[in-house]
Image 1 (tube, rainbow, N blue to C red):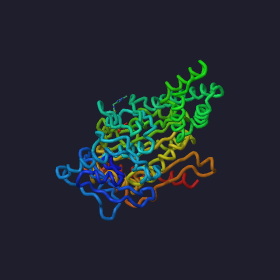
Image 2 (image 1 turned 180 degrees about the vertical axis):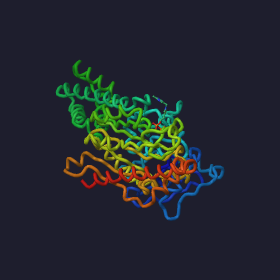
Image 3 (image 1 turned 45 degrees about the horizontal axis):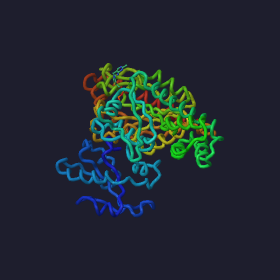
Image 4 (image 1 turned 45 degrees about the vertical axis):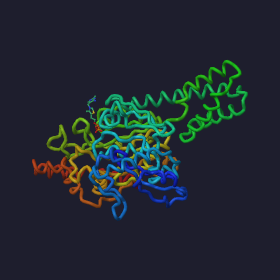
Length: 478
Ligand SMILES: Cc1ncc(C[n+]2csc(CCOP(=O)(O)OP(=O)(O)O)c2C)c(N)n1
C-alpha cells in the first residue's frame, strides 16, 4: 500500500549479499519452495519516502515491524536501497496474482508527487504491478494526471525488459472516449496485421517461420500469451528472407507495427469529478460499447485537485466547496448505474479494508473480455481525516466497518454459469456510522456551525446509507 512505492522486497543470491554495502540487513528467504537459495530484504528508499507512516500502521505483525525515525538518522539506508535496486531482477518466485506474489513484481509507478499518505496512488501502484508491462493508460485531468504526469519526469517507469505503461492525459471532459479511441486504434491495427498474415501464411516456405506466424495468428487475442507469440514471431520475421514481393510487403508492415502485435490492457483512470460528473456521458458511452476497456475511478468524494468542490459522489451532509452547509442530496450510485447494463463488470473496493477483495476485483476485471468499472474509496487530504494522513488505510477500513462504504463485485461471467453475478463482500457494520462521520472534518464541522441542521443532515446520511446497503443485500440474495 505504500503510496509512493518506496518499500520494496528484494531477493538476493548469497554472492550479492557478500558484495552488499556494510550494514545491509537480510534474512534467508523462506516459506516458499521457490525461495530456495535466496536471501530476502525489505528495503526502503529513504530519499523517496514522504514519511506518511501508513506502512507502520498496516504492518500485520503482532509486534509492529516498522518504526518511523527522523530522516537524518536513516540516510545510511539509501546506499543499501541503491545497491538492492541495482541488482538483476529475479523471476517472481510466486504467483503474481496473489497478495504476496504481487509484491515481488516491480511497481511501474513510483516516487510521484502526490500528498504523503495519498489514498488514490496505492491502487495505481498495485495495478501496475499486475498488468503494467502491457498497460495503456488514458488519464482524466485531476490529481492522478498531475502526480501521474509531472513533466519533465514521469512516475510511470519500465521494467528491465523495457516494458511499462504507456500513459497520456486528455481533457477532463472526454477521457473515457479518449481511452476507448486508443483501445480501438490498437485493436484495429492488430486485427489488420492478423488478416495480412493470414493472407500469406500458406506461402511461407520456412517451416519455423510459418510455425511462429500460425502460433501468433491462433493466440494473438490471448491476454497472457499474445506478447510471447508476438515476440517469437518478430524474432523469426526479422531474419526471414521473403521469397516474393507480396510476402515481403506484409513482413515489413508487420515489423513496422511490432508494438501493436500483443494485446494491451487499456485502463481509463480518473477521479469522481470526472467519472460521476463531467466525464460521465463519455464513461456511460464507453461502458455501453461492450469493448474490453477497464475504468478505475479514484473516489475521493470531491474534486480534489482543484481544492475540494462537491461532486455527485459527495454524500449528503458532507461539507465541500459549493456545499458549505453540507450537501443536501445523496451520493449517486455509479456502480448500480453501470450494473444496469448487465454486461459490465463492476466492483466497489477499499484497499485499507480488504486488500484481497481489491486484488480479486482487478484480476476479475482484467480477465473479463468486456468493460469493467472499479470504484475505489480514496481517503484524501480534503476530507479532514482526524486520525491523519498517516492512517488513510485505516480510515478506509473504518469507512467499511461503519457501513459508510460498501464492498461488492458484479461479475457478468457468473451469470453464464447460472450464478448470481453480485457478491456483497462487506459485512454488517461493526462500528456506529456517527463515529466515522465525526472522525472527518467535512462532516464534523457542520455540527459546530449549525448543530440543529447537522443533526438532521446526519440522520439523512444514515438513512441514505442504510437504504443503499439494503439494496445491495437484496441483490446478493437473488
Ligand atoms: C472542463 C474542465 N473543467 C474544469 C477543469 C479544472 N479541473 C482540473 S482537475 C479538476 C478536479 C478533478 O477532480 P476529480 O475528477 O474528482 O479528480 P481528483 O482530483 O479528485 O483526483 C478540475 C475541476 C478542467 N480541467 N476541465
